[in-house]
Image 1 (cartoon, rainbow, N blue to C red):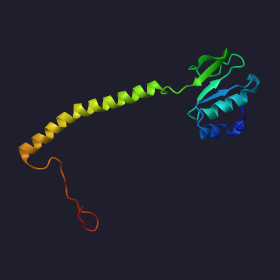
Image 2 (cartoon, rainbow, N blue to C red):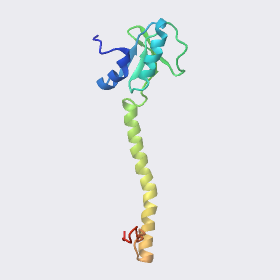
Image 3 (tube, helix red, strand yellow):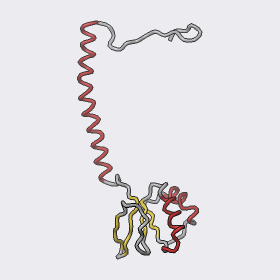
Image 4 (cartoon, rainbow, N blue to C red):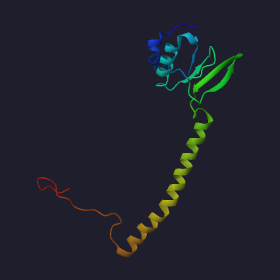
Length: 137
């Protein structure tokens, strides 16, 4: 694989290339570098996966383990709304908004019609204002 940059340039490289997933494979003896790399990657939208050297107990409790070609991979951060869940959420949001609009819109329309029929005046209240310098708004 070609080297795109150094660990100091990691966050900028991930953001500029649009990388979806980053695999971090550092030995346990480089724990300080591993922590710094993970801290920088937390500020990006990329999935972060760590190839463990040994059992690592200092990571968050939400670590999931997967396998890639027989090698164990720790997933520290996975985007929960990637793929179909994002489409389902969008559909749910639109359906909920339409339901809420129908639930609130029908009584509001009935009230507006009742105001217009009973009073004959405008449904929306307007007030004339005078601003600084005696100008009417």
